[in-house]
Length: 161
Image: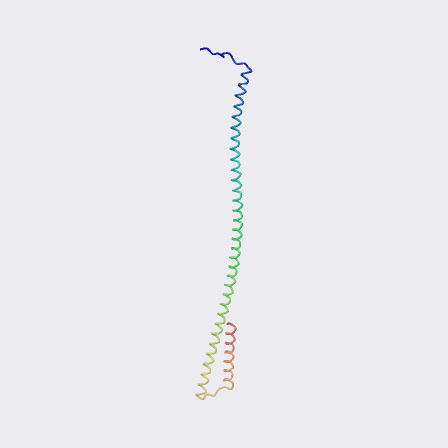
């Protein structure tokens, strides 16, 4: 068998055929480039959306951190104030305990003086019963001292209450 068109193509026909091949090749490359571009655009849009979401999350977290910091600062301030009040209260309590100890010591001292005066009065009464003469004014001084001590005791008790 023999080919009917066995002659070489002309340069013109070869160039047209080559151009057609090149155009199809260019169209294919262009289509692949457009597909790659569309895919890259989709990825970019997805990444931009992701970045936007992360930025919003970061802003929200920063706001929450600021609120938590403010609340922690308020709590710390309240604790410091409470601690200061507790220290002041403890100091006041210590002072009141010292005052109470002083008042108790004073009351015990007054009671001892009253007991001593009562013993003296009993001794004077026994001496009178035995017929021993007493110095003039001793009994009055003793009673006056006892009244003074009782007045001091009652007055001091009122002051400490």
